[in-house]
Image (cartoon, rainbow, N blue to C red; front, side):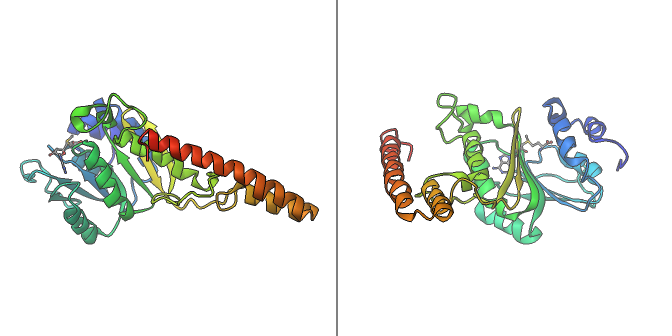
Amino acid sequence: MDNHKDLKNISSIYKTDKLEHGYIEIYESYFNQIKDKKLKILEIGIADGKSLLTWSDYFKNSKIIGIDIHKIDIVEKKLDRKNIEVHQGSQSDKQFIEEIIKKYTDFDIIIDDGSHISKDVKKSFELLFPALKDNGLYIVEDMQTSYNHFFGGNPFDLKYSNSHMNFFKNLTDSLNYQEIANPFYLKKKYDSKIVNISFYHNMVFIRKGNNNRASKEVINHSYEDMKYLEKSNRTGKKFKYFLKYKIIYKIYTLLLFVFHTIKKILLLRI
Ligand SMILES: C[S@@+](CC[C@H](N)C(=O)[O-])C[C@H]1O[C@@H](n2cnc3c(N)ncnc32)[C@H](O)[C@@H]1O
């Protein structure tokens, strides 16, 4: 094992295509500070094992776990190392992923370099995100397949299709979910659980963490309720501000809500 080189050097030794894709520089900017820690790193997609060997050298104190739908010959691929473990199964197979989580409990870093098919990418995220530690990173490579119908992506409807790019784009709203001034807003699965989402060329990084900061604009997703409290407490004019915020502004918000709900139904965006 080579423990003394930087990630670029190690990647070129093993000839991982992460280097030619331009991923290694981005990875190094995230991993440089944590490379000596004792981490649990899961990568979906092993193929020739080039990336597992790269991580094995770079994260010398960490456990590298690889999963692949195909059987991987660990001796032939030279993956029979102390800090590498390999399992066969599909990234979208609930039972298999649950067994992996049961075995390892949680992960510091999860990298999806598997099938790159939209439904698999989204399913693995759904299954594995709960097992990501706080401050952990979930990374998806080769996001370009999102724009390709041969991978279940959609090159014809970039904004509203079910592609995995749109899935992650929509997750950005979870960063600010407390600010959404819709009194009928229902908290979504990933709201409050993500602190950062960074998009790069064909790559996305999601940082897990507690994101429960209260809004300064709304209370329980209502601008009217926040304003009513603020103004009536400050001036004591409860009736005036009740009429203004709880009746007039609320009716306006309600009308907008109904209008947008009908629009979403007509455009099949529900
Ligand atoms: C791009 S290669 C992985 C390359 C490797 N991570 C590297 O950087 O050297 C993709 C791998 O994903 C595997 N794969 C495809 N579909 C999968 C699935 N549903 N679940 C798990 N692995 C899958 C393939 O067998 C293939 O080995």
